[in-house]
Amino acid sequence: MRISAEELLTAVLDPESFVSWDSPPVDVGPGPKYAEDLAKAREKSGVDESVVTGVGTVRGRRVAVIACEFSFLAGSIGVAAAERIVTAVERATAEQLPLLASPTSGGTRMQEGTVAFVQMVKIAAAVAVHKAAHLPYLVYLRNPTTGGVFASWGSLGHITVAEPGALVGFLGPRVYESLYGEKFPDGIQTSENLYRNGVIDGVVPVDRLRLLVNRALCVLTDPPAPAATDPIPSPEIPDVPAWQSVMLSRRADRPGIRQLLRHAATEQVPLSGTGQGETDKTILLSLARFRGFPCILLGQDRSGQSALTTMGPAALREARRGMKLAEELQLPLVLVIDTLGASLSKEAEERGLAPEIARCIADLVTLKTPTVSVLLGQGTGGGALALLPADRVLAAQNGWLAPLPPEGASAIVHRDISHAPEMAAAQGIRSLDLLRDGVIDAIIPETPDAADEPVEFSKRVGAAIAHELFVLAEESDTDRQSSRIARYRNLGVPQ
Image 1: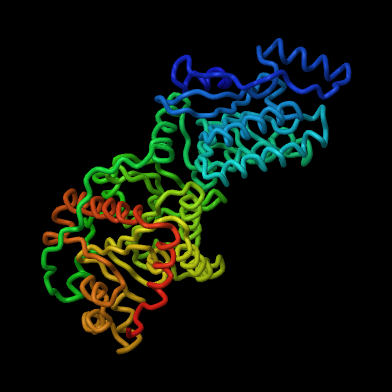
Image 2: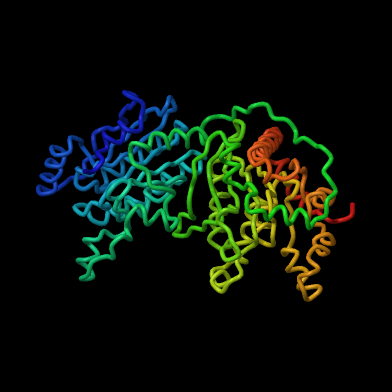
């Protein structure tokens, strides 16, 4: 059973809130056979074209909606359907509305040939203009979504999820078999497989879609409603050896980004992958709110790391996706550093690890939205540096930052690892040293160790993030960006 456009609207929108934007389809001058096909499609589907557009509300928030109807000529897109889609996108842009698009389509309408095929360009262009206006574009792929629809407006979402078990792919399996004389491999063109491979953000049944859209809009469209934010408490930080912080940061039970989300975020919508066929479990990307402040949260996930599983190029490309989302949606970006270090492997080298670190640094230091970086635990090498250069940089008391783990520095200087504690002290890697040197702006206390107070510590970090977002919101974009550039330009230079 396929989900109809009407069923989708009923599942997502508030009751009786939908108002159609559709006018009669443009006349494409169909020949007799095509005219007969169109008449039969109208009778079978109960709609006058393969797409329905309009506006409704989700828990009171106005949302523009575009939904394909598969029972009308397999949801195919011709000139009339494309014109209806583009008109709706343009109206959503003019009215400053978020847009939910839900394709289910075999692709281009074959009865109209190449002119229908080229319609995908104008649809993609309209969506690009909508996104350039910093308006959310959410996509829900239904079964099936293939061809030019998937390769254009079906793949441009800020957030993209799909119906469970949906056939989603570029070339439909029947076409593939006809062209190549063999079946397309099973299990490839499924929503679950695309999610596993970082092409889409998730698999969501239609009866859960309303909840997801509501959570997303809560972050993306609701204005900040900050609770009281106080400066980070500043008790005297104990002057302990750097090596002690290194050891404490490596405790298996130390809270990380997942505990931060669980205990300190008021809303969250997890995202996944680069959107380009890559995913990396060492990084986490989510929409979130901290004490009423919306943000894109991007950080290294200690629970996904081990000595054999460290962050690779895909993690950095996912990080850059988060940076792009923050800029497109004009949301602050919060970054969490907690890494054993970037991957040291043949595959990582060949897939461009070092260039991706460089691009992350360049993207982050020039980002147009407010940025807060939190050194939550281990901060090893280029993998940590890639998420560091923010407007405000905070560090947990036992967080640390170094070009290599102290053992690696010892191996270079002393040809052994037994001098690691000495190297940790000499290199100024602990939070107190980083504060002294201007690398960080404030230290988040641990009393005495985050692993012994995971809930309270996570809430303290969330409160510190909210406070910094509040302070940054008071600054102009120009002043904030100039200060960020000047900060890193002058870091370490005697004044």
